[in-house]
Length: 297
Image 1 (cartoon, rainbow, N blue to C red):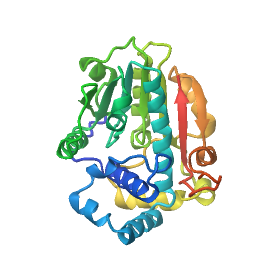
Image 2 (image 1 turned 180 degrees about the horizontal axis):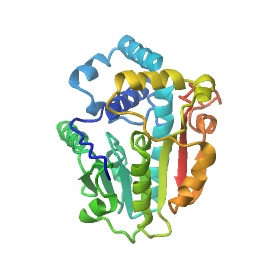
Image 3 (image 1 turned 180 degrees about the vertical axis):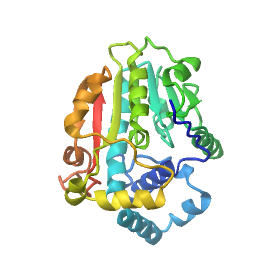
């Protein structure tokens, strides 16, 4: 590929995802909306100290919600969705799980006792991955033998080559989890990643990912949180720009072109109804409306 982007520091968006998961855990204290009890270990010590105080937690939540309306609720729903897929793979004893752009994902550690024989490959940029490992060790969180860390630049490195070099078996059934990543890659990098996945020829392979629809003028006017979210991304995350988006009506053909078959597509309304309703059936909060979930095989 032509793009030789070199990532020199840990991901800012991965950090803020960990912060949102921490806030959700402290606010809801349950496995439905706040299951990630390890998210806080990836925050600096002074963050963890100040978040002990309810007023500071509330102020932080409100400030982040003003900057990016609905994004914390989207992260809550996304965490639940990807937890569900991860757990299903463990229960079915899927031989391999690949986390593409793992960030501060904690599933390999939160669900360690449920993992009988699944190998987990965590791929991310070296700076983010090294910081993650440092945080895990500092918090004395056991890194199980089932986990393999692979540093990668998705815009430069060959996914399949890097996996195979590190013990991945192409012929074994695999769940590929691609959470919070696709929209930060250019279109060719997304295609290259999917085409690498197709070379893993087992019939039971699955790809689970989220993506964004294009934030057009119409979407800005009609989709909750989209305009403020986009403006905040431009202002505060200049190094992690939104590069890839695809329309809902194009995702099926896009996957087919890359030798994948669409199993399920969840738009923002479906995500809210499935993952953001409390026990009384009330919506706990609206999510930023331009995001989608996809399951493909």
